Image (cartoon, rainbow, N blue to C red):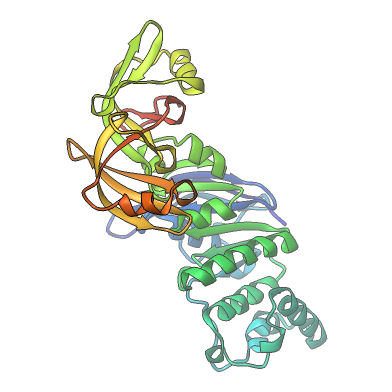
Length: 372
């Protein structure tokens, strides 16, 4: 098992394009870290630098206290699972898993024990004599994971391993990776563009944009206290609603006035604004879709229903306000009668509201959270 430390790690390509800027991160032994962000943010490039598959332009990578910048991938004590499985099509499942062990001249009886144990953990014992083409996508990914498992590596690297699977299989494999992590009890570094995977798998999440780290924190921390507007909108599905409005201070209390409706900022959020003595003025106000509720007629913010997405246990109502601002409202179906659901048709006028304690406040110029 091992810790991983990245200090001022940088990647610059020949055309002077900087893909990763001064990446600093300490990963503890047995921690599950997830790099997440949109395409092109530098997350896979960072993972490949850790693996030794991409040359490091600056800074250092340490694994278990040893600087590995100049070590070959095979000497770094890592195992990697790729997005496209990278299986040998002419080999059986058994031979695919055993391949790296045979390169190391491991005795066949030890190989047999390691391969069969990995296959049992992953539930692929019945497929050991099959070729990869005879397997489903989920089964192929298990084989790829098994090939990494038998190496007894210090660090497990996974580069978008579920992105080629359908939604149902992705959900199943997420659960299996959680169980696998418990069985292996090793250090994991996992790359994904899917924030749901990041939130469900990671002990901590590293959110990236344009080669820069935007925030590092637990799933709860990045969800409840996003460092900036990018993190706020990236984490959460559907994404956070953002409204340009005024922050007002009257009699020691704070208020916001989105779309002309005055709402007190109460609870911990109000206390936090007061403790930081945040100045009144124009802000970007953030409210998550699940924190907006339908209000009675004439109360709350007036808007018009544009799209009603039926999601099973909830409705996603896409509405627009009088000035054209679009919001998404998550409404549990259990709280609505069938007649009420039928009334939620395109063009229906609605009123929505939210409490002060669920608000997030961002600087309009740099997007920073005013409560950081």
